[in-house]
Length: 112
Image (cartoon, rainbow, N blue to C red; front, side):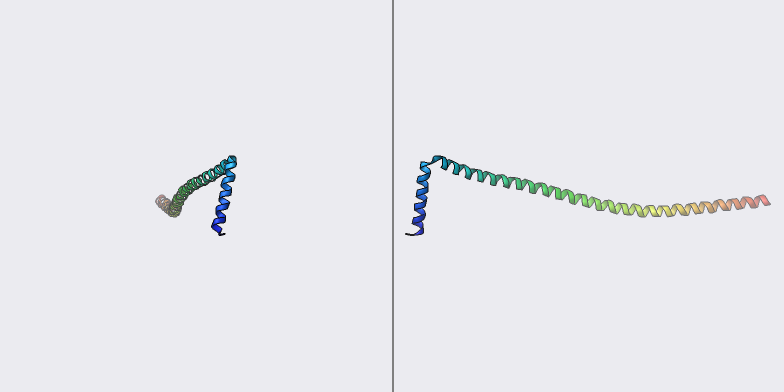
């Protein structure tokens, strides 16, 4: 006998057994439905998770770009602050020099 005939006999035996045991047939059908449901549920959850991760990745990318911009602005502010401090120091020195010159002129005028 061939493998097809043997497979047919096994299938016939299984069907006859399930006819005499309807509860077993119901359990098999229920298990198949449950497996299909769990597969669908896993696929749905996976799609939702992927969507959430894509959104979070976009937010992270945006935040990193903003941080880069902030660091550039901060560097510019630090540079400008240093320049401002130098200008302020120069103005203070000029002011002191001007005050010293005025004092010397007054002293000279008083001596005359």
